[in-house]
Image (tube, rainbow, N blue to C red; front, side, top):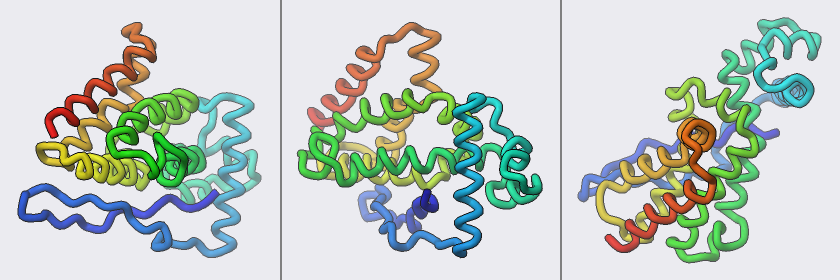
Length: 217
């Protein structure tokens, strides 16, 4: 498992007042020492095994330390707290999704028009996070950390890029945040499980948003 993708460089506001969000080059990500990287990978492997055996709710810092036969302090130094551990576990799954929308085939990948890519992006995120529901819910318990995470920044930059290509109206950064809010794991889980909204209806709502933006452009 690799280190998280880097945060965006500080965005500069162009004359229009909209913030120019660009995708950060992956080669600039910070590198851990080889031994530290191996230790981190080992702890994540243990955490993933515990999640598969006991469910994500039973994966604690103490449980990982015991299973990995290390001190609890080692786990806290690597990940900070349980939310940090959950975010690290998400890294592998996020990279699969990122590969699909950055380098994969159309309509999600770069060979499709911006409108088709944005339309495909919503269902891809919803279904991806649904497949790993418990892990995403645990990782997103700390919303402040979620908004600052490299994965969220990459999604935000991707959506903003597609909106600019569509020449969508309004403040592109805020529109991108609004669209990502629609795809929130917490919101989707509430709508699907508590409100009885079907997956088809949820995806249709996304298509409607994208079509309205395209019409406005």
